[in-house]
Length: 242
Image (cartoon, rainbow, N blue to C red; front, side, top):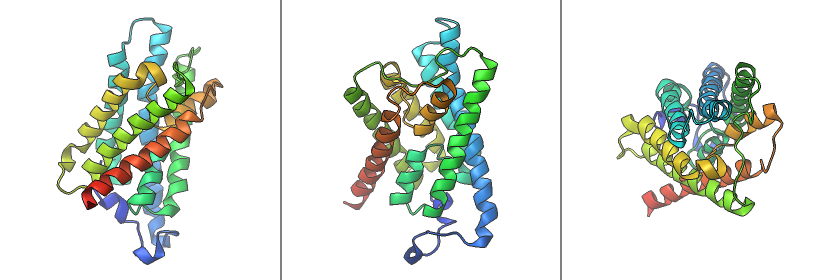
């Protein structure tokens, strides 16, 4: 993931607080939206495919295989599109960065639209390729609602703590950001995969849910990652300011 440049190169002066974009920024924003769409497509396609394959062909994939596909897909997207859009790939990341990292508020709905569309398109492609798709790669809790919420909150907190550290801290090795974030996704998937599917991302769940029609406790995967992202980003910021 690229460093602070992707956040600040669109941002007007602080007193304007980024509520609107200048006309000359339109082309940059369009490129960033396209990058977010493609990046989210790759991420969802990569992370949702292995559960679908495992359901169709039992024991072909393992927990490690599912976790690896999620972590690797995130890492390669950060390497390939991080310098264009920052490779948020996740509304929770976009919201947290808008609140704490001066990401333009005007870009937030644009990014989220691109991410949602990328997720839906990836899920639709998977439903066509692997028809019937069984559970369609949907993340559904296998534990109680309260425990699932806490688990998704915690793993998203961990993810955004790491993302904030390697992306914005000049003392961190930002060249290895993609690897650090990918490994964090892999770790979280190993921890929470069997229990919640280790979504950490509203659109990772939303696209497959819309295509398959399975909305079982979907609110967990919207609320918990957003809250976890906000707390993860703000906690690292507090540590640096303390």
